[in-house]
Length: 145
Image (cartoon, rainbow, N blue to C red; front, side, top):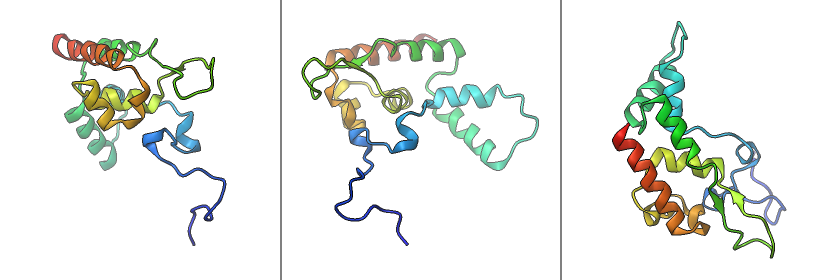
């Protein structure tokens, strides 16, 4: 038996490129790989499981930021980033960047706005100059901390 909605149903199909993430992820807080690394590497957890060990190994290998203060600074880079209301109704307020987009950007660390939009298509509504500034700031934090 399939859990898909019936053809012509009212439910929207999940599509990360359009930020239709489903009810569980729409309001969820997302962590980027470096935050997961911080949580797992500093855990006082006495016993581990195979999954825990593999997750820690993955996070250690792919974490772009290894210092707790740097991870906080990266997260703060996004405090004032908003999507222009280009596709919304007239007079709509800008929206904060979605947690999924933020976590994806911080985990992937693309070098250019074009690369970021290619990897995370939902970013296409953001101004390239704004994305370039954030990506440049993230690159600087990776180099100097």
